[in-house]
Length: 107
Image 1 (cartoon, rainbow, N blue to C red):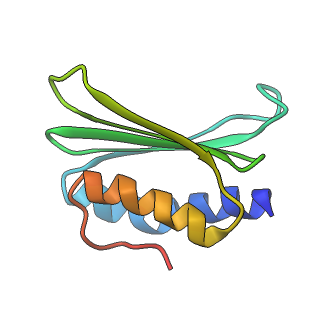
Image 2: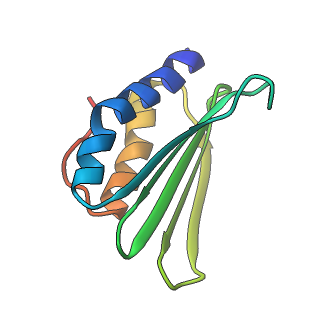
């Protein structure tokens, strides 16, 4: 199930990353390789002009979201564990909303 979530997050990014970039957001997808860690991960960064955000999802189902404002040392960090795609999409919605994205909600 966890590999499905990593693949689903990557597929969502592949489908929506260019649109977000065209809207002026800085977007990046990062992957750990199996040689770097036994616990593979996918990282999504979405930054707007005044806000930054990142989600890291590990194949074990652990997830971390970091949200911040440009020019501020204040950061919001939340960690958890997900067991379903619905839970993953909920975390992704937090990141999108933080950066003012009101569409592209995952299914």
